[in-house]
Image (tube, chains in turn red, yellow):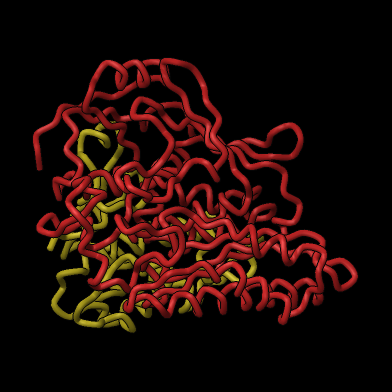
Length: 331
Length: 124
């Protein structure tokens, strides 16, 4: 590991001033991804600024029905929060399906948003990787691609975003609140993560000197009947091959509200807007779910190693919506 | 291969290999040495011995620290990925719940059945 200096920020103003003054500094929260990447020398900051003592650990109801989540709320605490469990169960389930109990106790909401891909070629410094070394090429293409993306890829990169939490946040239209010496900025989750294009090393629209201070969830009544379903190579403690966050409300046999997002298929949490558009106002039945899923996956481009994901993603969408439909009719 | 060792920070289980010590300067850290020793075993340690919750012993300190943290989380009402009713206030600690909640600790000898039995006994 490269030597680095450490400082601890007592408040937000000090933290954003400290990073603005240092060219190669990183904030550190739970450290579950950054420490690992520093050991591998994929991240090589000169300074880490510890933000774990900042007062950003509350989950509060907002006037108007939304919820504000402090950026330092631990993943385990957010998953267990009563408001989240009852009003946004897909978010609790997404958090609980990620990592392990130990890691969820360390990992923060802000850090989860900034997780980096677990692409094997990104981690292997002997391999070419445009995300790690812009312009060096991509050895994942033509390589072992079981975990890789099928939507929104480019010739430069086919890595996936590893987060479960972010898939639920995408379905819920969350807003990321960021602070810098220039003031506060609010970023819709759909504009937070970037597709790779020519520059897979640029993963988010957050600037290097901005600190995530909170995530806000709007009031989403349909989210009370929602689920997160994760499909992976073992039952627990593994990244998603495909995951789906879905919320469904049916009125008189017709879809009256729907939210749908996918994980494990793209460099960003994939909001399935095309499928939502087709489903809304249509009949709530498996045939319609199948058509919507097929339309969403129509632009998918696979490698030999991950072609199964195109069919798998459709089946998981259909199964998750069908489960919500069955639970809704039973209620 | 790096050792993912579980320790307790103010009673919460974490992975020490991903923790910078300086970040935990004001937290109380408990390792297996603080749980009990051969003369004064913690009831959960005794349950691991009685139920063959290990073979080579490499993962045991982590399994026991993790189980202590896990039981505290369960006592506080925390759900898991296999919890059927997320909104429930009381969640039965079934075998499936134990296996899911302990999935961050691997045992290459495959002593899982004994580990689950030991934790069930230790939870009583």
